Length: 265
Image 1: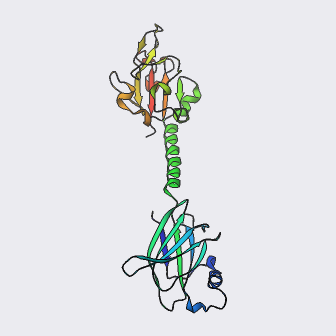
Image 2: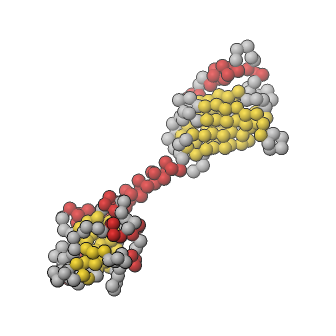
Image 3: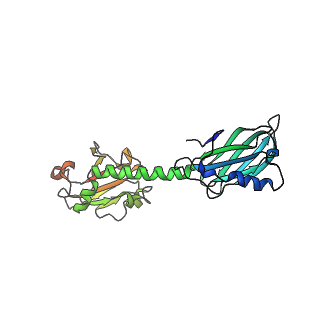
């Protein structure tokens, strides 16, 4: 959502005192009507809160679109600013704050005989902040899906091995790292998963059955054949038929165990 700005309207009570500030800028003994003062208020577009430490630059535009004299002001803690303009003309305004998207706004007209130009500016939080919020929302959404699919309930029962989103957070980019140290599970040199012994206790390795988001993968599936490890949010590993939840094969499993893969979708 772009930053917004408004002019030519009455300033809110929060801007009371800007005219007095403008008088100080002009200086004692100088008639106010001989000057043009830009006064304004800067707020957060989403929260409506006044923003301090916003740098405001007003630049007089030349007749051919070139830049002329400029004046700089900084908002106070109440989001207010006042700047004595070099004279009448068309101005471009630039507003900058570290945590907000920069705003460039033109034309702003200051006419001959006008005492003040009133400005109300709304800035949008910077993209990085919004992305952080989006990430939190997405993580909460995925956890909610895992909850509905019974992942956390099965984890509390204590059967099998469960890799939660937190467990995979820093190791979902490498199969060997993600599944290292899990009893009964082997990662081959070409990043394929094998159960050791399965239910037969023979010590041989076999290919487990896979379920992706609750749906069984057909044939001799391999993990990386149907999902990118970066998309995996949680994993359940059941080595023995007695551990496998009924809805995922239970005692009818092929004897090599089951791996449930959840993407949180």
